[in-house]
Image (cartoon, rainbow, N blue to C red; front, side, top):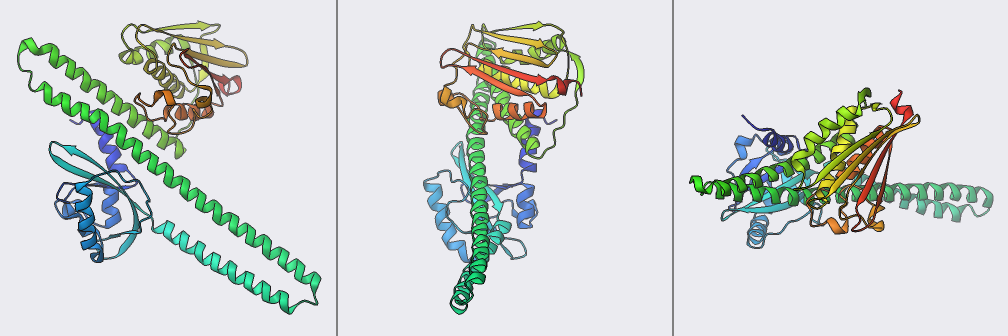
Amino acid sequence: MMDLDTAHLVSLFEHATEGIILTNNKGAITLINPAAERMFKYDAREVIGKPIEMLIPQRFHSLHSGQRREFYGHPQNRVMGSGRDLYGRRSDGSEIPVEVSLSFYKREEDLFVTAFIVDITHRKSIEQNMLQQQVELERMTNDMRKLNTQLEVKVEERTLILKEALQKLEQSQKELHDALNKEKQLSEIKSRFVSIASHEFRTPLSTVLSSAALVSKYTTTAEQDKRDRHVEKIKNAVRNLNDILDDFLSLGKLEEGKIETHPVAFNIEEFMEEVLEEIKPQEKPGQQIVFSCEENPVIFSDKRLLKNIIINLLANAIKFSGENTSIDIRSKTRPSHFEISITDQGIGISEEDQEQLFSSFFRGRNAVNIQGTGLGLHIIKRYADLLKGTIQIKSALGRGTTVTVTIPAAHQKQ
């Protein structure tokens, strides 16, 4: 049976909205996901083992073959949109404009290249319409100039017409500028996602592969401790992969508006016992998590969202704190609100970084060497917003961090 982590990876591959194609060092297709099948109107069985050039218009074959050989000789990652006009060829011979990002990895001595493909037919259509609008605007401007020459005697009427035309021109230019900026931002977000996903998946997968290979070499009872050590590395790597997938899936659901709140009354002390038991495998040696509750332990909120918030905050506190440190959790129930704060003795956050903490894919400058997607606090903030709550952070470099989540009574009583 497929385990949960493998199921996540398969789900990510199968349900990705971008086309994903994997080729070997000979340029032959070894994997293709459903999105790419739909995009090129091929069944996977028709393309597996065939050269990638079958998905490229005939007129580009010789050029692409040379570029592919050059890439395989000097492979390097290429992000979405790099000034190239690229086209794909469907099974019926029709062509579509595409954007392609490339990443690679080596398995044993073989080089594999992953292509992430986006059909930009709609965007090209928008760009064409924008160009047509620009031509139309230029034509209108020329007409207005001619009209100005012809109607010199009607100064008042001419001024009004010019004013209205200029307003329309300015509005159209603003709309054009805004549309181009939005497209640029979307392209940058996709590029950052592909880059981070590629980097974050590669490290734990390499650990799994290397440790699995070493485990098979330790066959005697006397080498059990070595086997255990590599098995633990595999477990940690799989947990990291699961955390990354959870972040991406959570962000996707939030962006699609698929998460709703369902508040219920529950005991915060019993709730925290479950949370601490779940987070325990992530604790470093000697770390202690201490929970205390003030006033009434019964609260009214969405149990699932609150659990996700606290689990994420605790995981950060554990990750960014050293061994033999203490993490304090305090909850307060007041007539106007419920409040829970988590305090660690970790590396802390600079004032400059605190201003951008809740942005997607943001990593603090003192945390770039610590594994993570930069989505955790962004997702936590979105969950808190759904609960009509707020998040406050107090921190200083080298002096730990306190994160306080406040949920108003208005939400608790709804």
